[in-house]
Image 1 (tube, rainbow, N blue to C red):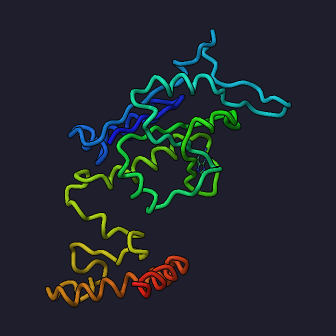
Image 2 (cartoon, rainbow, N blue to C red):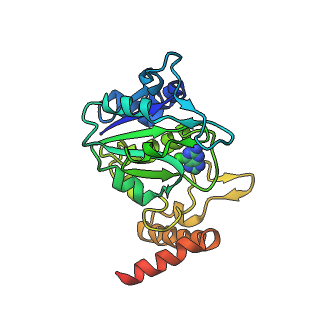
Length: 231
Ligand code: 6GU
């Protein structure tokens, strides 16, 4: 999988692309990430990428030309899936992450300022938001997308299928986890987990998953009930 990111703040991606799971996936050439500063594609004398809005008003608007110039400089941009991150987009989800993990080439534009020139929207296939709050720029949102998507690419997580048990992949939150010590400040690990009885452990985990989902996320629980009855 290849992801190109168009941003005005390339340094924000340095630690993100070099550490942890993603850093390893890049080293192992399973994922390729290119960070492109689209200010370099401004033809303006002062490398300006924004301007004041037609019709007046506060704030600045991202101009279409530098974005267009940067976009067409990317090898294979026509075939790539082009994503705009914006609070006006469809809300990101685990389901969307699965869908996007099958795409060979993704381009993401991170916006700043008050907004995008509307004609930028026409250059992109999809608009995604990461939730109902406003960030100062799209970089963190793009990182959220990249993290959630790339960990689902085959071979990125070494225990190949461990993501199949993630919260959300079956509309349930995960069951509680424990590791050593078996007792901490009087709090003991549930007996069943030490029993070695795999069938009982599996039943306990499912029961706890359901209980936790019901307590914390009624919306997910209802989805779980509906979808497990449909099967
Ligand atoms: Cl994608 N961008 C910005 N700037 N703010 C957001 C967002 C994106 N998603 C939620 N808030």
